Image (cartoon, rainbow, N blue to C red; front, side):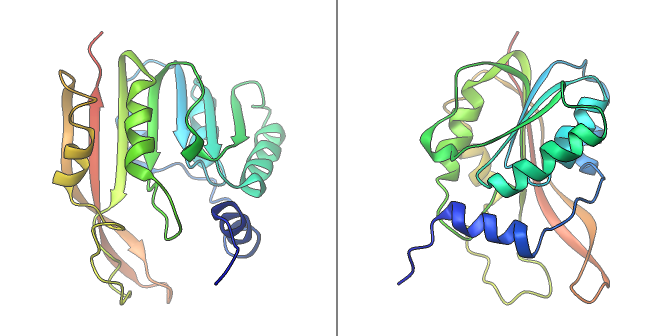
Length: 208
């Protein structure tokens, strides 16, 4: 039995395995925001801060939450180095305790998945509630294990597209389903080989 908490786990991940930022935003985020006016954004599980910092550079007032203070401290320092501290902000927060008050024109949860305890459905439903009128919710998730993995396609770790939509259905009733599909992207195996990865993409717009 281990006494490791989710925060302990992710702090260690960012100390040992995710030590550096890619400096590149998620391609899906770049595509989805191409026609959106800059406003207030919230990223759940902001990691090393690439997406939040990119949004800030596009004029967004961007906030990132992550359970790891190691990740948030690193992202905060990088935003300062880039002169974006006023627009790109990060806070270490256990989202299972709830989201703070406020509303956002863009709420993102990109690969917001974990092998350790995470009440993901609960958090995503709360996230829908902080989307401002006329704003959008973007949820992207791994739809299947990577080809090199021996992991089973466990729905607790790899939700189906139908499951993603069903989990949000009652809290987003009346919203516009802008996009809901499984997409393929090119990734890299641990050996550096190009592989196809499958993602669920759900983009919903709240009525103005």
